[in-house]
Amino acid sequence: MKLFYCTLLIAITLLGCKQDGTNNNGDYAYLGGEIINANGNFVVLSKSKHIIDTIRLDGNSRFIYKINNLKPGIYTFKHGGELQMVLLEPKDSIMLRLNTLEFDESLVYTGKGAKKNNYLINEFLQNEIEEKKIFKFCQLSAGAYQKEIENLKNKKHKKLKDFKNKYDTSELFNKIALANIEYYYYFNKEIYPFVHYGHNKNDILEGLPKDFYNYRKNINYNDTFLKDYHIYNTFLRWNFSNIALNEHYKHANNNGFKSSNICYNLDRLALIDSLVTDTQIKEELLHHYTINFLNKSNNEKNNTTILNYYLNKSSNKKGKAMVTHYANTLNKLKTGASFPEIQLIDSNNTETSITTLINSPTVISFWSQSYYDHFKESQHKISELRSKYPEVRFIAINVDDYGLDSSLKALKRNRFSFKNQYQFKNPKASKEVLAIYPMVKAFIVDENKKIVNSKTNIFARNFEEQLLGLINR
Image 1 (spheres, rainbow, N blue to C red):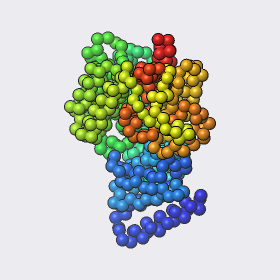
Image 2: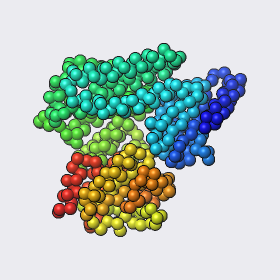
Image 3: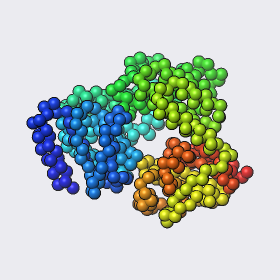
Image 4: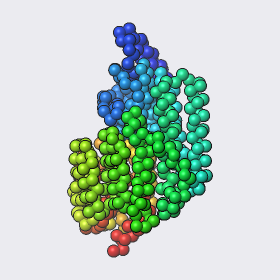
């Protein structure tokens, strides 16, 4: 394995030297690597939502690709539904290695340009590890919470300073690394009112130190440099949710708060429309919150109001068509409707219609190898629920388009039963018919094949109450 990487890196270096003789601007970079337990035979390389190329893996699940006319910055590579970012600058020759079973955790880089990317991926993973700690800190008073997250921020700044002292870093890397620290800190500030215990969010907001959100005056809501960067977009979502909370309480009739409130959601969309002028950033925010609302609300009138607002404010024809189609599909899946005829493949590669399987109270959930943690957690949860509710049938459907063998290997590898495990015969069409978004979505269907709930979640606090309601009616 080491011999392969050394040989490949030497070859890249020699190609780079040859290139230097004919092209003095050095505006190229190499990206290659190896994918363990590949979920397909290609990697998709993109920048700013635009696909650069689809790169085929060889027989050993390896690839190498040269990017000409390189524009320095953040690129994304996608494989099997999972994606991650890589910072590319002129004359970089970066090799990656990852295992799809632990996509982010297993990712390592070697070659020229590797150190900066290993730093960035380690920071990404560290943020994920700190998440549980942050949620516990959120139960502290605002002043104590602020001290804790400032302490975390200061440690990150020291780590970055040490890295810059040790290695010769570029201005581009420095800008991205600093933004990662600052926007993660801002994000932690924005989530506080939502995670802090207590339903009266207005009291929480009024009890914050006056300088708690001072950084907001310097926020650029149209940062074209950071708009493809994960933490910036995550911050924006929580920031708009938070400032909409302030707007909501200016005209709310009581101090209670529900994220499903139509007024609150319209306030949030209006703030996005007023503060964001960059079309890509605006569209992604409007799209995200519209889809999110439609997926949770069972009020048709409110759904129509939110949909119409989005259609009026969005300038993205493709996005508007997609959201309209999604809303229409959800309307066909409302309570009391017959569950659609969908063709499945069982573990023996036998085709069957899903409605032939529904002869008792039934829960239908979905999984994908692209969401590996959800796959494992949902399988364990279903096993637990099957033991508690033997009168309910639990059907788990793999939504991937990798073939039956791939899904069976994933189940076998994790020692999960093949019983009541299926795969869509036509994944793309079936996912559209059932409006499967997000992946945690599940259906509850009665013995007459009528939909009881098309927007539930097996991890929801009241999920078992929903099951008992169906069983006892």
